Image 1 (tube, helix red, strand yellow):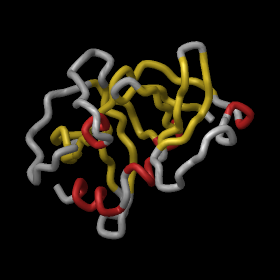
Image 2 (tube, helix red, strand yellow):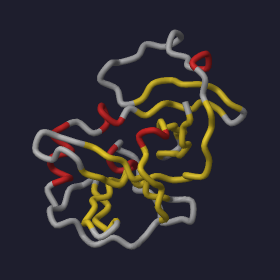
Image 3 (spheres, rainbow, N blue to C red):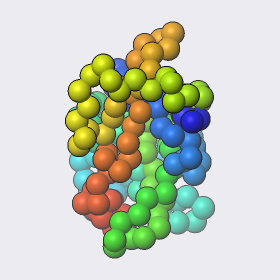
Image 4 (cartoon, rainbow, N blue to C red):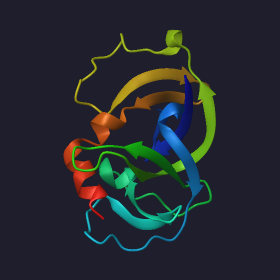
Length: 149
């Protein structure tokens, strides 16, 4: 699996590249029409209003700072009310991809909570990388709130 690496706070994460539509640079956002604590704002992606979720705020960390390495990871998500929409995920240090083999997945050493949005993944030369599960991180309730723009 090819994974895009990024950070949320001090933790490193990987997201399966097959879930990513595009990675966009940080831009100034319009205020969210229906403000939520974890929404950074909205921007126009290919002519369509697109909500951007700040992964730092969503996970109880500090907001993502507007740095050169802070990017918008665009993913396609669906809910019963909104069958096919793109949303942005704001993350820090979005700078590289890595190939992860099934043998590198390490889920036997630690208890994995099925409701958790992350699982232990692998160790590399810089520490632990955890796999982010978008379906758990963005349940239908959150998607319906964010996609209603």
